[in-house]
Length: 171
Image (cartoon, rainbow, N blue to C red; front, side, top):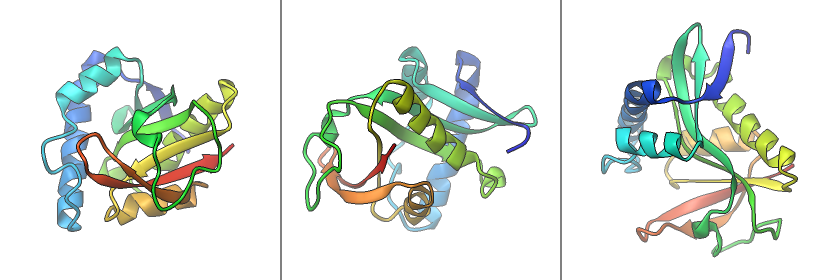
């Protein structure tokens, strides 16, 4: 998308990242999804992601319109998958967490750009796939994942005990 810049997030981005999380939380609440309704993610989460060098933001015309944690590595909650299986049997893969897109920027390719970044990071690391999970009721995210080549693979259980639907994109 013309004018869209994807870059690592810095400490100066934390207030906007927290605002994007709040906007996403409101949208999920309005759709009847209870995902993120406990105050997570928040500014502290953004700071942790920046410290770990996994936080990214997308800018459009000089304004941050999206954020996500994107990295190549291992997600312990993906070790066990229920009612399905991963297509790749590997210790590391691309991972996307905490995508939040400004409602004013939706349907402009921002989410797709973040998902492509994850695939590119995984490819550059020599990894065969990218993985993501979301709340079963987060239909907007599920549709976005499917539009971007992610395929439903089963369910995973978070450390909190909550269930999520798991997706994988073969690279």
